[in-house]
Length: 260
Image 1: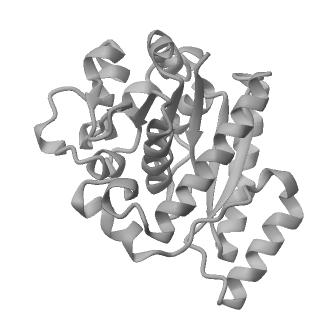
Image 2: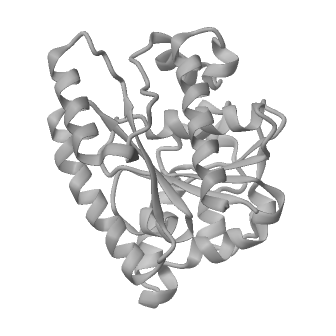
Image 3: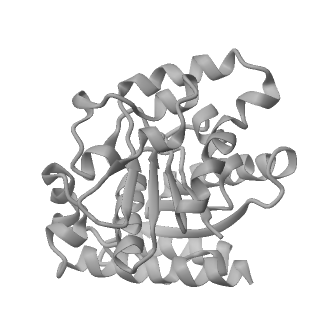
């Protein structure tokens, strides 16, 4: 049985795409067939997987708006068991299109579309845009769980409460089985007092929802997307690569426990 995970936070620059690409890569390297669906018009996950957005013939926009079957939009990546449905700037046009649809139907488009893909993959990862619009809502409706990247700063905590409220609304109205798979602290530098204080506050409030593994600030992680590679290919011995391997193992363990 496949597991669908939405990686979301309406705040930008917190490491959503980095987490989506590198958790997806680590899942694939561990032998689990994984499909990454890029739902962000910026296409950062697409670029980080080495795919040129300007050369795309089909992308997520075509799946959501033109009813293109999932299988026709899937592209291979540099990692054998990791596939991606890429995104381009065209995807920015999906929000107004979905907004014109019937209220119940517009929030179910992604879930309906990805049903056919679930049999071929153990994990589906949705890389959400930095907003709580219809693309993110579609991901939450289609997902079994969420991973929430949180940067260690106070403004990130304020945004987190808003996101959790939105997840609760989706759970109540559209997807009762949706759960919070975990909160991951990103871009951490615990030499800074502020980072330590924010991390302690998050752990105190959210307890077991916070992953044990945090993702450090790491120059190799920052460089990897510009080379079109996940960190496990760009620098597999870096601290960023090790952190994402450990985080991925936590994700696997949680999802396996949830299936039992």
